[in-house]
Amino acid sequence: MLFEYAIIGGILLGIFYALLAVGLNVVYGAQKIINLAHGDIIMLGGYGAWELYYTYHISPILSTIIVIPITVVLGYGLNRLIAPRLLKSADPEMLSLILFFGLSEVIEALASLVFGNAARALPVNSIPTSRLVLFGQGYSATWWVSASVILPLLGIFLVFLNRTSIGLQVRAVISDAVEAAVAGINAKRISGIYFGIGFALAACAGVWGVFIYGGVSPTEGPAITVTAFAIIVFGSLGNTVGTIVAGVIFGIFYQLAQVYIPSWSNLVPYVLVIATMLVRPQGLFGRRQRIA
Amino acid sequence: MLEVSRLTSGYGSMQVLWDINLHVKENEIQIVLGANGSGKSTFLKVVMGLLPQWSGELKMNGADITPLTVADRVRGGLGYMSEQGIFPSLSVEENLKLGSLRTQNKSVADQIDHVYQRFPELKERRRATAGGLSGGQRKLVGIGRALIAEPKVLLMDEPSSGLSPRYVSEVIDRLAELRGGITLVIAEQNISFLTIADTVTVIEGGLTRFTGHIDDFTEDESLKEAFFGIAGH
Image 1 (cartoon, rainbow over the protein chains, first blue to last red):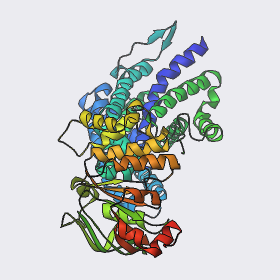
Image 2 (spheres, chains in turn brown, red):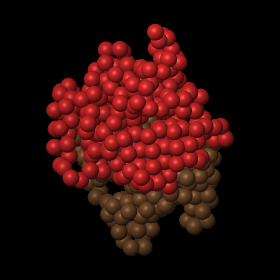
Image 3 (tube, rainbow over the protein chains, first blue to last red):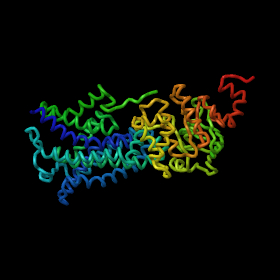
Image 4 (cartoon, each protein chain N blue to C red):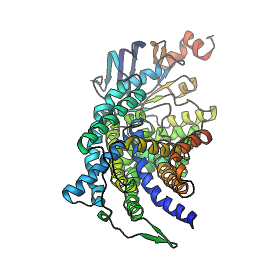
């Protein structure tokens, strides 16, 4: 029974981890940079949900939608600010790492000043509270409600990416920015939009992170970034579907570890990155291109 | 159609093009011939706006296009097919759709059907990832995408790159079929492409060594020796 509990619980939890990581993957796709402030954007999403609930009595389910346009605009603006400087740099990857590390520190310090160092939580009754019962086992409302909100969100994102003209242009820019420019695509605008979408997905994950992690605190960002990074490496950098599947697999691994070896469960992200690098460096969904 | 005079350019502070001159008439096929590192690919990138033009004149239909961005040049009717020519992670059909972003006079489906009529093998593999096609098929996807955009002048950077001789012949045959409907400027080191050339420009060490009609090129003994490895007589 414990095994079934770990698998089903892991899938429900894994859907949250998929959203947690997909935003980082999107920002990587948009600009070929690792956003070290990713966990801090998730943290801000959590504080956003907290403020919306306690100030305006807005349900976290609705907050998930409200944070999207705000963070798309913020991400787009940030991209237009930094992208030209990165492109002019002799070493854009290193500059971006330093820049986003700095941004992470600034966000953490500002969050401490504004919200204080103590963790803040949302009441459990701010979302439906009934437990999900499957095969005789009960699963936390947090897990199934978050999965029920996140799954359609990821579905809409995949439809946007694979079935719309802008989504096709996004994938073209990710594939080859120069080739996209000569195809008449405004690569800067498209990258900016996609970068903003990455921030929005992170903020949405932040709303549900308040429940999954039991609260939100200013210092949680770096650990979340590590988890998200482990998942996108496992699923193949830049591969959206790979990230989503890897998120679910990560959730299952994590839950199995929680059930059978709980004191070791926090090592799961690190073990996953090392194992991926040793066994399949291109990740689960990494493709090999035909040479001739 | 396309006029280039005394064009110079380079990468950073390193000058690569010293004095490039050429003139391409409407519906003409011009081969820009040169060895590896001669500067022919750099030249095409400068014409497309992907690299800065240091000095010289660059005109299309008599209008100076030097100040235009890449997007403006595309809108103005300039097309470019890189050595890769495709988006490897996208399907054949998605690659072709991207060619239609700037065209509004036909439906996307009609334009893609037109490419499939021209290159039937692509229709069979329309759902396949372009990066997984054979070298020759990848070039056809690149050519098809470029043609859907309906450019007035299409710049092609080494369409023979990475192809076996059989595929090179196939690509040449397909390009020959386009004669009369489009102006082509093809940067190549493979002399097989001279069979479809109306005019030739030879670039050596970033300088224009020859520019003129294909007949004048083949009658030039020194060029013949340099490129065909044979002297006249």
